[in-house]
Amino acid sequence: ETSPVDATQNPEQTPSQNQPITYTDDKDVVYLTFDSGPSEYTEKLLEILDRKNVKATFFITPDESQECADLMNKIVEAGHAIGVNSYSEDYGVVYADVESFVNDFNTAKELILDATGIDCKIFRFLGGSVNDLNAEVRDDIIKRMTSDGYVYFDWNVDSGDWLGANYTTMYNNVLANV
Image (tube, rainbow, N blue to C red; front, side):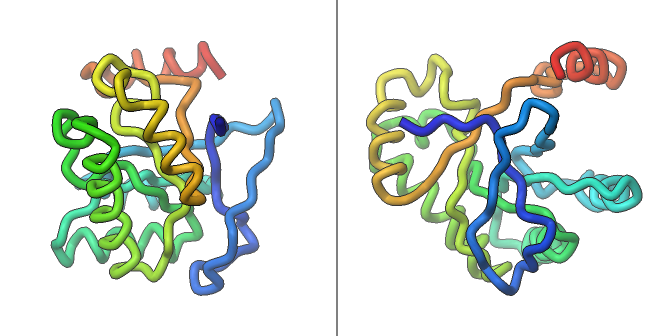
């Protein structure tokens, strides 16, 4: 069973090389990840990351729009890694069974590949690998996806953004747990 914490693209790697992503397991390294984008915040976020010379991993929830494709390409062109989060973001659909998960994953993966040329090998479970909505299928999904050559990444620090936390609370949540 594979359960790394997080990942980022090797800064020396350019998107056109489509090389394997390298990971570091180092207690002095923080991996910054974002889920469920791109969104209306992506461009501003990319500006901030660029200004601070920080790379991140974006776990994408793509759609068929040109705007989404353009934003995914901006992420890749800026040297960030891309992984799959979900296509539908519908827990009932995604976690109905293993095949439903795989179908949702493949739809998202193909949209990312078509837009960016990146064949994603990393993913993040919708809602994290351990949640009440995937308990019955989680282990079978992990077996299937890892046997197909994919690696999943969870988080070990939660900002609380999904709970509607304000900036100050998110900031404190992150700093208290890094």
